[in-house]
Amino acid sequence: MQLFNTLSLLALASSTLAHRPHAIREHRASKGAIIKAQRASNASLEERSANYHLVKSYHGSTFFKDMMFFTGSDPSHGNVHYVDHDSAHGSGLIGTMDGHAMMRVAPHHSGSHHSVRPSSDISFTEGLIILDNIHMPTGCGTWPAFFTVPIDSNWPEGGEIDIIEGVGGMNRNKYSIHTTAGCKVVEDQMIMHAAKLTGSRNCDAEATSDTGCAISGTQNGDFGVEYNKNHGGVHVLDWHHKTGIRIWFFPRDSIPQDIEDGQPNPSSWPNPRAAWPATHCPPNDFFKSHTATFTNTLCGTWSGSDAVWHGKQPGQHKSCAAHTGHSSCESWLQSGKSNLDNAYWKIKSLKIYQIQRRH
Image (tube, rainbow, N blue to C red; front, side):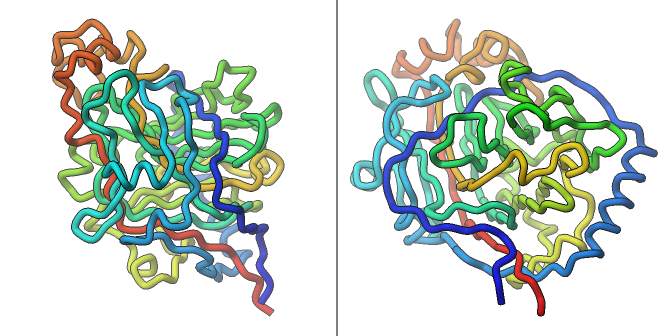
């Protein structure tokens, strides 16, 4: 069998990635348009034969073995310093918890807190990325993200796809894409399941001050404290040149059996939580050679912004400023009173699939 998509092995090394925060503006798509787009997508799905081949699985005590670790200050201007694999392992920032991979922020550190930013050691253009996650970082000042991005491009060249992202006490996930000029969202082509367009319809990062085309979940539990109480779930990115970019989240009690069996079949799943159809944004024109990346930063341009720190986010009973008694995220972290016990990832597995032709 011949691999349908591009896949390449990368050397284990430090890398330079760029990631930007997202502004939020609200728009809605009509129900009729959503149904029309869904029918078109289903027809397109029937045209191709889903035959996925697992090319890499990260799990358990070997999860970080082949990962690449970015080192240095945070590109998102967070109050963390990213360290390499050996330093992280030696200081307990990475390891296992209940047999599953774990990564955390150093709870107490003068200046910037130590953290990790690992990426997959293979790159992919198209494919299916499946993350089975149990716990994500939560709490005031946190800014966890799981996304795909090129390892060595000048951002936003090569694009970025945000699968999990949010800040502080939020209880709803933000899904987004960032591209160079030319990728747009046309409302009557959006496929949205319990989600709404909150960013620009123009996905060009430079033209929209890094906003990107963002979609917000409207159901609680796909991010934050409630997510962790429910032991997380499975996040899926499907990237295909015909259908575009689509993202699903399946809570722990509703994971499709085909995923559990290692034979994922997106055509049998319900509508995605977020999607950017290929018609006005051909994915392979804007997204190339991505790696799957985790971040666990603090404060920064989004979580540390005045709007977030002093505002009450979805899922919060009061602002972080009111909750902590500090006027800024940075002052709270440096006070020595910050509680980062829940600022950790606990991951069951990360799997990368590629599509094969059937002969």
